[in-house]
Image (cartoon, rainbow, N blue to C red; front, side, top):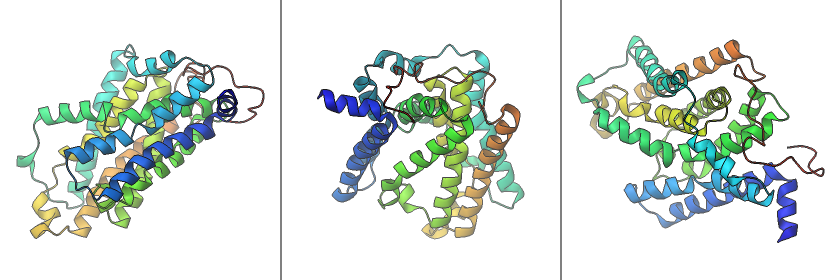
Length: 298
């Protein structure tokens, strides 16, 4: 056991990614093999598979003799100032509004009579924070990002996390019963662009709040919930039950553009080195002890 812990400690990022992928891909692979149809149970199990990154981080921190309490504490770091909570909660709505404006200007049909109630938004935010995406951030942002930023710029680190994060989602695209699995190739490519833009946004929020994974998870949930409140006319998007490829592509493009523009603006305003007006959190802030001598690179 001690030799395994030593190996994990010396190969922290490799161990983290391997465990995160192994857990998530095993759960989601089993779901795909089972043939389970889309349902609430299916969604809950997909969300369970999303705990691969925090499980991977927890194992590495344990093996390294770090502080699990300090690492988990990032998920409860709520004293970040009203400004950052306004941004975490309000920026997704601004991005949605800009996307809708672009959609309308491009000729997209909308129907504001079918919008969901605010209660649905509150549920989507709560679900997205703890089970529908935000749970990943204790791994990607609360663990992997600080290690990378110890050696690379915030922008480069965001790109590396983006690659690992995007590839980690692969089983969802291979399962026809998931939302990702039903997307056409063009939508999958747009999602990939959004992943890298989102990785920059999440890094900005994490670094600017001094390592609040809670703020990142809420921000993440808000971005994921945007689709619920897009007023695109469903009868025009899916006439007679058959998706209109052009209108659906238009909705996806106009939704991705504001994300990319926001990411570019943040790089311009804050610079790629830190993506914040303060020093980024260190691996020690995320609960890890200093790296062993044998670990010469992340």
